Length: 423
Image (tube, rainbow, N blue to C red; front, side, top):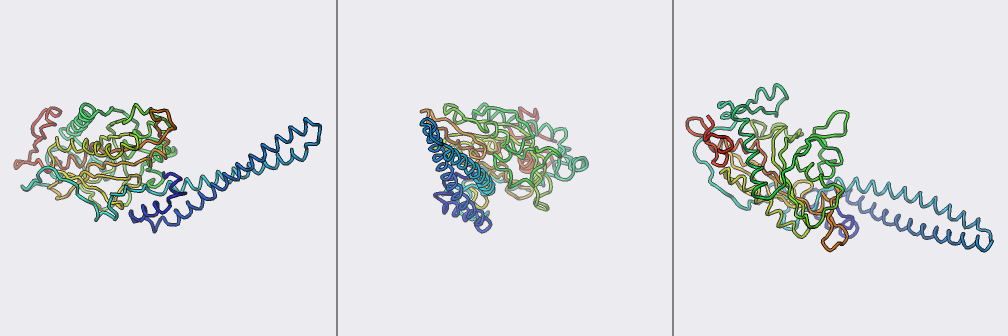
C-alpha cells in the first residue's frame, strides 16, 4: 500500500510510476479519486479537530458558569450539538478512509527509478552462468515417463490437469532437492528454517498483496474465508503482521518449504505440457526483513542465495531484470532467474527475487523500532524462490540426459539420493 504522503504531496510520482508500468490509462480514474478522497479526508480531520476544540471550550464555559451560579443551558446545548456534529464527521471520515484504502489496495507498487519502463520486451539480461547443452536431448516429460519418475496420467485422474504424481526415484528426487535447498539456505546463508501452514486467512493474503487483485488465481476453501497459499511468501511475511521488530534483529531471514497452489486463471494453452505450468508444486522460499537503507544490498544478497542453488545443481541460467510492466504487483524491483531447458528450447523461470520496499509492510503493519528508540518505522520486505522445483526437475532431466536414456544426478544431489544416475 502506498504512503498517503505520496497521494498528498507526490501524486505525479504515482502517475509516472503507473505510466512506466503501462497501467496509467486503466488506473487514472482511481488515482484521481484517491487524490480527491485524501483532500476530503484531511479537510474532515481538520473539521473534527476544530469542533473538538470548540466542544472543549464549551465544556469549560459550562463549568465556569455553574461555579458562578449562572445559567449554563445554552453552552450545554452547544456542547451536545458539537458532539453530534463530531460523530457525523467521524462517520464521514471512516467512510472516506475506507474508500481510499480500497482504492490503494488496487494500485501496484512504484518500481525503483533504475527499473526499465515498458513491458516484457524491455526486460534486461544482467548476467549468464554456465554452458548450454548443445547435444540432442528430449523433452522432460518423455524422459520422466520413460524412467517411471513422473505419472502425468494418474495425476490428472485423481486431481485434474495440472496436478502431477512423482514416483519412486522421482519422488526421492523431489525430497532430495528440498533437503539440499534447505540445508544450503540454513547452514550457509543463515536463514531460520520455518514450518508454516499451507492455509491462510484473507488478512494474510491482503498483507502480501495477493488480494484483492488476484483472488481469481487462488484456491479458496468453501464456506470459510481461507485460502491455499500460492507461495510461502504469504505465511512467512505475515508471521510479523501487526508487530514491531527490534532493530537488533534486522536483517531477519526466514526460509520454508511448502506446497504451493495456483489456479493459473487465464493461462489456458500457455506452456501447459509437462512440468512447465502446474496447479500444485513444491517450492523453497527465502524471505528477508530489513531497514530501508539496506534494501538494495539485501536484494542482491537474496538473489545470490537463489543463484547459489542453481550453480550447485550445475544448470546454465541467466538473471533478468524485469521491466516495470513485467514486474509483479507489489514489487519495486525484481530479478528473474531462468534456467535453460534444451529439450523444450526455453528459458524457464525458477525464481523471482524481489524487494517490495515498504509496500507489503504498510499493508501488513510490520514495523521496526530504531536502535535509538525513535518512532517505529516500516520495514522493507524481500523474497524469492530458492527454488521452485518443477522447472528445476525439468531442466535436470533435459540437461543431464544421457544417450542410453539415463539421467546424470548433479554432484551436489548424490549424497541425498545415494545414486549417480536415474535409470
